[in-house]
Image (tube, rainbow, N blue to C red; front, side, top):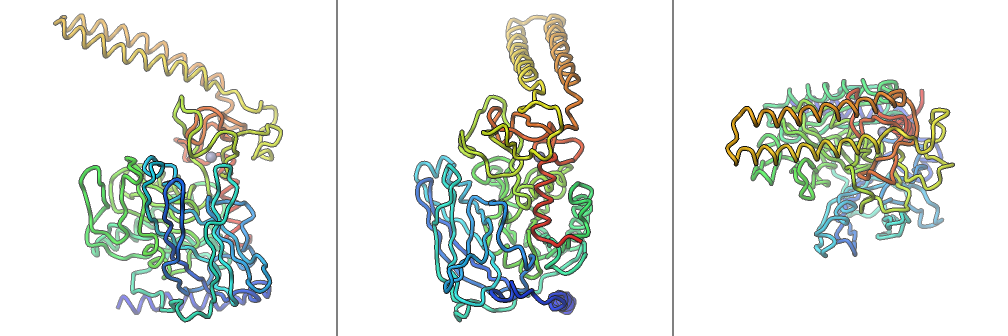
Length: 493
Ligand SMILES: [Zn+2]
């Protein structure tokens, strides 16, 4: 029965695909199909190698026929497709993977080589093409790290059906996949009996996403589907807790040995499951209450579903994977880091090193009359926060000493009250500074502190989902950047 229902869905997608004839500009070079190239990316901090595992022919090309070359220059790695006969660039798009992050870690710096999977999809070429993958150096300059000639007629290219009998659900249907942004949710750590829960989680997360701008205003430019493959066990691996679960995608916390960072290492399998529907971006839902998630830019994002903050984590992580957004949060003290070297403009659209204050990345969005950079009391607040921390430590020390001396409860209480009074004064100082700058909360400026660095990197607004925002709103630069990706993958009405 399941297969019959799936058959109807596939027939519907096929019909939708047939409803449109690709324009001559696309049809001259490509079939209306996707070519999936499964790669292995091997390396440490110094050396990297990319090799092909297998190439597949998949269903329709789900993105627009007309935007084939990324105009935004996104991606730490980029795939470029050239026509062999004419040397013409036919297609170019970012194709990041775990290696881009791994190379900055301590094991990689110590020369430990690891291997990561990555599936890259391009429109299916009609003639032999040269596929080149380029990676950025520390100055963000692209250098080729892989190239291969692919003959689309090669009989080694696997042309088996993409249908695997998994349950498919449609949460939002707006039109032909070529004209719309197509999101696909995949199930991770849901057992066979959790099928209805997955469907309702997809509906819940979809509903939440479209309460957030710019998704909200562009809802009719999206299709949202879910593909359900049951896992033998619920949840995911948590190596630091000694918890391991048998699941479809092998999602695991403690990626790169970080506490709340969860990633999927089985990129090939993830794409094979997603290929049962047209998709531009993958979202993996993990059936767990734990807090956390992760993402690989321009590939996928992953989030648990049952934590009270899960929906916010999902929209934040989707900001990375779909919008190519940087984190805007930072640790006080830290100035620059391996991820954003000093003196290099980050490639993400929502943070800037402000190397040329006359040419702010989001200059068309700036509120009039604000300074560049924009003073918002950050240094004053951080100085008071440091004072508070110092007091907390002193309080703990004093109380420990008093207890050691065997002072009576009343004396200890007196010490506590003294510190509480001092803390109240400091808290009032912070709220006074915040009040002084409160009018900036809805303004677009250039605010220092972003991309894990307290100094030298800037964001466009005080609050944003990419830093933390109780109002669940993106800043102006992020809204604009997501809007541009919606334009890239879909047709304006
Ligand atoms: Zn933002």
